[in-house]
Length: 292
Image (cartoon, rainbow, N blue to C red; front, top):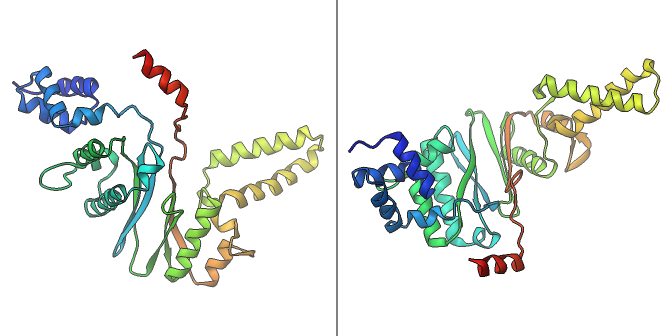
């Protein structure tokens, strides 16, 4: 029996297992849905799938560098306890090496890519979930490239709670790491003012204008006030306009220039940023178990 995309979708919805695992389960069982579900359970994949709706907002970031290529990745767990486990750290190391070797275009492509002759990355993660007992997920990754004249600045803060990877041309690795540490501490959104989207600038101008008018400032000085406050806004969000954390008497842009360097890109990951975090409530957990 031919396995259709609709059948794969249905099995995935029923079990929460990965797309490739669902397709294989159906193929192995001639399209029989119930047998495919049993097959997934026997393989331990359905057990992993039961954890798919849990919140995994803990974890670690990691950086891997090889020649002119580097990758920074975030892999999430449910608890900080598991994230500190050596088995998880080994898993994270395997994943970053795999990502740098394969260079997939996105997370979905990475999960479908063969990690070895026997399994995809998705299957590898499901096996780890079955062993560790927590949801584990590859949340995101970025691959950066440099020229022979460039250097990578890599920095992990708090053992991997924050990761920064940058590419700097014309300077040394010590300078690049200094910039990476600054980015970890101050969290800029853009390299310079030219990178800020025009719509964001216009929105900020309008907010600043209304603030000045609400303060009762006369129209003829509002524009000057907006310009001054907009400059302060750029100093908050643009790397090169920020005061350098290791020397507040100079801006990052001036420091880089003094070292003969220019920055072309940077990535900053902080574990769990923007994600919903699980609220632990032991009493509620006991009550819910008593009702089941």
